[in-house]
Length: 514
Picture 1: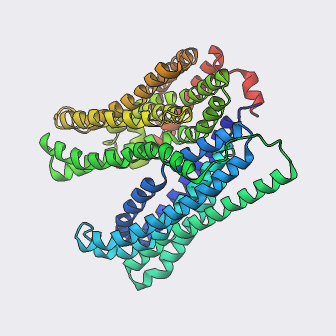
Picture 2 (picture 1 turned 180 degrees about the vertical axis):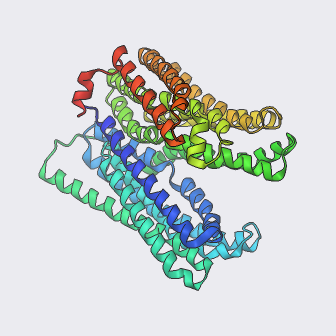
């Protein structure tokens, strides 16, 4: 029987991919409807929404899943129900507070000249209700993740995105005759119905769970009755470090946006060339890295409650087993992805973006696929173990390393934008490896060494197959897309065969998953 957290990982991964596809469709439709100027107004409003959502709710799912998984491990349904009730009330109040903060902050940003285009006011105000709704939504998702039930989270994510896409396009179309600012506001307001649908679905899942509990009596374990003060303090203590660690991502991106163009100018680039190079890094290479880590992001959400449950029950062997399974899943996917993107950077750039110039940046950023996945999984394991502050500290220390490397490497005419990509690699490597060192030092947990050797060997042979196919294929004069497909296919076949031959993946394992 497969582990619940691995099943949950697959559910969340499928949901994440579908959400990404719907988001891409949405961006295409809005771009055609609003044009560059309208999308620009929408993009001015969206970063404030993302920042306040990250600030208010980024750590809530992890914190809730840890609290609930401890109660679930003890069989304390009453305690879990009470934690949900207290947390939902607190999160509703937090939603009102942050929505009010945004409502009063927006005029100040516009009137103070921080937001240069005042036409974005309507779009920014239209997103305010979605900020308030996002916090209770995060609370309910964390609740179900604590029980290792990932279906409610996955369904709510898909339906939220679908509702968002439909309403954004319809409202933008309906309000566009009033002018671009109103069209952008209509698109922005689409996030509100999406959040409402997500919240209603999660409440329905809670109701269904309670009905199931009433039909299926469960011996109630005796546990300490959670109080309002204790629950609030635990939520803050667990969520705050996670939120701070997650805020490092937009902080790092902001620093990158400021430093990279400036240091490229120091390397002799013109303003236009530095902007173009930044586009290659942030607009073309980094989205590939983020796409490559959708499975590990889902794995991270699943592994937090799984490890927390094993730790709460004092099952050391189960904790070690789940940790190794999580790392093995990450290695199986992210190692070949890094090798493949490293070898195929230029062909990918030509096929996806119609230019070869982003190729060397994509190649330079390929190790980030591995290190970002390592950081995500190791962070989730540490959170499950209760060491929520460690990833935050490691991310902060690695940020200083990134700034130093950005400052020196990007200004070097020989490395320029590649140096910026390497700085990102080093940033994520230090954060992930720092997590690993702490994990081994405190809990004697680490990567499964035998799996590492087999997977790295298989990925190396896969790389050789991709490289060889790239040398042979041009003689048949295939199209760019066909050649890239052949190289990927050859690599996938060799990688799969090597996993079978080394025994890392067994035929019996594949039959079980059918």
